[in-house]
Image (cartoon, rainbow, N blue to C red; front, side):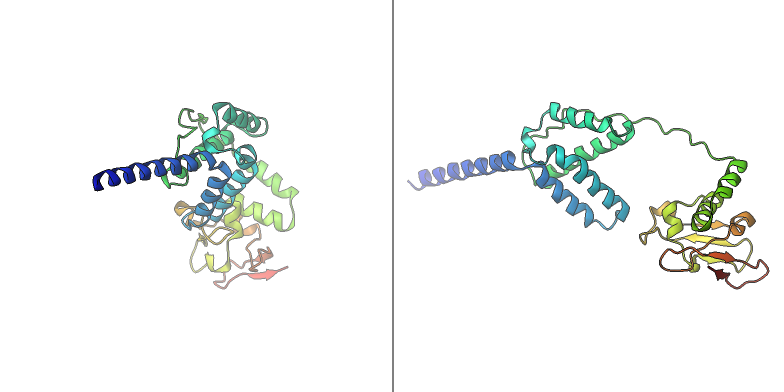
Length: 245
């Protein structure tokens, strides 16, 4: 008798588990797992702030409006193709491929983390191919000089520094006087942070020698508020430059 009761309890438990799993599968919407994914990404301090912000923007602007109201198990290949078609009308093919790869990542991680139990509607869809990186055509020396000749003020100093050092825009905004070394020739800039307080990646941390042309452009951030002032440097002096507004 006790064996029969135990067997019945096991069957009831199994049925409850099946019903529970079915409920998770049927009612879990894409918006729910997308918000959990964003929360997880934002808590990951190994990711650059710019990456986390970009991920959240893509999900909230493109993916949730397309799939947010839908239960994941009901998303079809046709739904995904309509989503990609909308992206292709406004974005480059490489950007579309990146966003689609992110979409696949969100659903895959939702299954791995137990946020959703059910079939992956994207597992039968192939990743979109990305084009090989195109060759970047740099400005000639004459073109760079003419560009600087058309600029003035803060923008000229920033663009001039970028042209002569190859620094990213965010890295330029993250510079401070402590990053400048003038104890010996050539003077150097040490890139330690981005505009948001950290480098884009490990390869971004580097010490860059400054040419005479790089120094003569007249730059360097002298204020913690990203204000750029024209700086006058005495090449014969080992003191820091004197800032002039």
